[in-house]
Image (cartoon, rainbow, N blue to C red; front, side, top):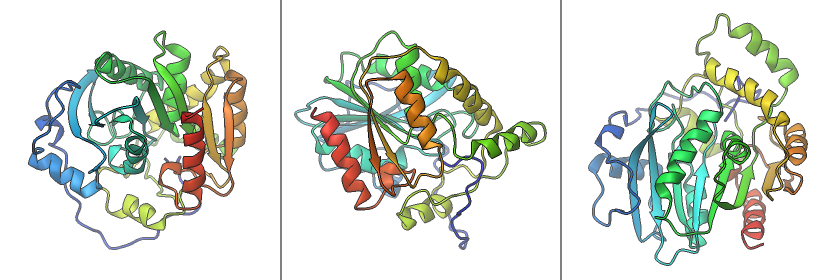
Length: 327
């Protein structure tokens, strides 16, 4: 995710024709984890997965489907292994979607975990105004409905991974939901407060009166320059604007999270020092204050898009995740 606009942006390049996946959601069945498809995929779904390289030889079966929650129609995808040691649920970041989380899916499958990931409202293949939300608690709501649908159908123990806004969604779930099915929680560069908020808050408070959907700035938030270029120029599911409604929800989250109850749940927070998207020092203090048993791992030089970082950052990130998973 990138908030408002970052200083360093991806250079301009010629416009490249992007495939159109706008009608794909209407072709998908209702989500049902008990009917993973072993046969050929829908042609449109096959094209989508080819484009984003979402084919994983570690999975024995795969499935996709829609579910309704919080007034939205969401799209979830899952990959199942032959002898699962558990299930990993993944929550993506702002502007992101399932298509760019192949490394996260691969992480789970290579560790013999079933993997489930869904597109947030207004993201990827899910419905909703582009990248908009009224409150971060809606992220918690849709995650809760997804978990209920998976109940008694996917092997335990259950684990959860959240990047940036996805990390905020998991924090909201932990703080506001009675049912707590997760064993291990992995938060990558979680969002509480964005970077340079002392400046950006005035941009928000003034802009909300006359800006509806300001242009998004594509910032280089990983050392993988090719990934950044794909995001900016070749990904058809990337929003070209930022939502003022989402910014309002983020402001509310910034105020409400530090006031939530202390939670004894052990969680892992992995953060890079090269992150210029979130105010990571503040965020780690705020999370540690609410989750006193959390473990913090600092990756020197790693940027915000941690799940799509390059080596040697990726090696350090995966080691931190493995250490926590096997703890």
